[in-house]
Image (cartoon, helix red, strand yellow):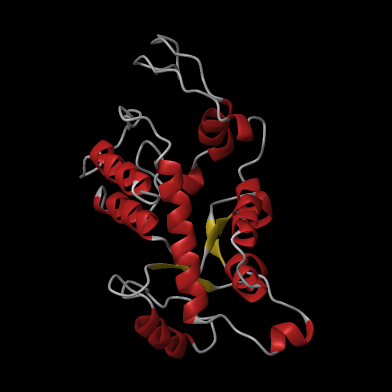
Length: 234
């Protein structure tokens, strides 16, 4: 919240909302990220511009500690105003993310040898294994998977739908609201999910080569997460 620029003139009562965020979220409280804008091209054409999120669903989302740490590492690796950059350091919104990034991540890639042709790779690109659960699928479906996790963990409907940016219709939505206790429980359960996954990683896990070096030893950080995950049931 301390870095919130409050630059959305269409958000009603933004000063009051921000004051509440400062009391509720932060590095010493609950880590959180603000959903305020999305990059879109008007009618699918022209330069990418900032638009309100889908359904005008401006909201603040609590983050599990591991994800907050990763985002802090990423922010410390560059000085751009944008969190996620393309490989060449420009706005990710200007890249063909689906074909240039996601399809490679989900479907995998064979090793690519250097090519002298225009647009070809100048270095050998290592093979990337496919992710079976995501092969051939759209990245947007990850949003559906996130909701399934929240449902599996037994969170209340108001907690789940608020996080997804939805409103509950009728009396149920009118007489309840998202509480700090609900958010703390989501943080706890999401962190536990990550640690249980980390515990399954092999002892010699190493991150793939990154075109943008991080200011931390990512492999060492993951090893600390593996250790914490394996300690859950010990």
